[in-house]
Image (tube, rainbow, N blue to C red; front, side):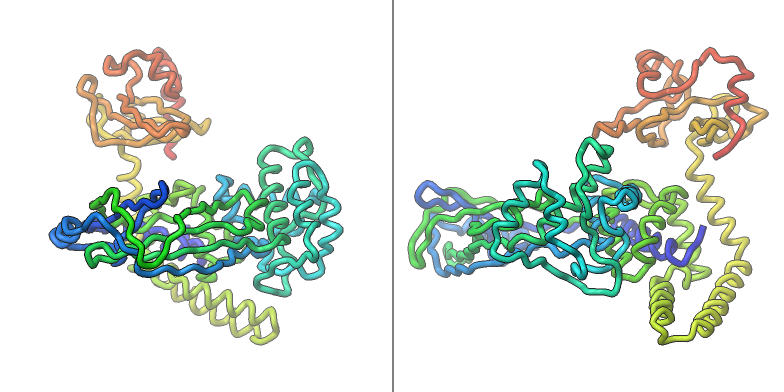
Length: 505
């Protein structure tokens, strides 16, 4: 499956995975000291940060004395701005941060809109133009939101925050009051996110006093930063972010503090993080891939086609890697964000009457024809690459009965199992867990020679290794294997097993 939005998006995921796979960690060292004044202890960090040479780090560390002199002190009041009104992208990112799938969040938002609880959920606008804020605040009066409402209404004047202004629909905001008993749990969670965010945009900014202190320890400079809130403002009513205070004692330039402890920390550089649903949607917006309406749908397509897995850490499958690498070799334009971004820009120009649609259509036809010609010309190589990877992904080991490949299959009823690739000549098959994550290994059972698998339950971090043969003595008992999600009865007739083994995934 290839598309002008899904392919560049998938390419970004694959490229990030390649960065992670090729990443080589490098060692570095950091130095911290523990200072104390008036029974208040706090940490100061080496100002130069990372030290790449171990001997240099050890030398600096060993020469540190027992006293630290305050040589510089800066205090300033900082404003922590409240959030701007919700557009679709920021809504989906916020929902994802609360463990709500982006596609699910969009579906729920549409349901809430149809029920008259929120405004239209597909928008780029971040300014409340034409929104009757007093009317909405009056409608929201209920125990769940009264605390925030009282604080907002006590202000001399309610001035909402604002971001980008477009001719689009207004930002996502509540329209009428919903209560827990009227909504499903996930619907209530999404509704509350939208209400809480809306209220936060109407409350005042937070204020904090930041202190930056520098200390001289045997001519090496260390720094410590403190933060004390003067006014929590919108943070009092917004549960989706946290700001921790870091309290420093009252310091005076020139005074001497005692170094209570010091630490030389050995660390390694870390690979770039995998995309989450939230960060990927933000990247798609930045690269102009898709629209506010289509981005969640594109993600759903990538999941449904087994190109990607995971939500907080999105990982591409081997098939996805092969598809992208093959397209880069034979149809590079398909995976280029620039092509799609240009087309999106041109469609906007058409919408605004600044570009004739005929020219864009004609150019698109030519581009598509070139891509299709390249794909057709190289269809044999493309097919071979993808087929080989697909086989590698589905083969899980050797059949103990005939030594052919054992492959992952899906039954007519949708259940996954392992069957022999020589079916119907060989009817060897094994059930698989229908819940949790199944990870295939390259290990074989010492007793029955069947492949071994790892089972990861979604609510547990640890994995357990099992032989796929539920009757094997290596498993403590068949009951234990069955309790882990194995389907089927080992005493089933040959006919029943054959019926279960009819179709490949």
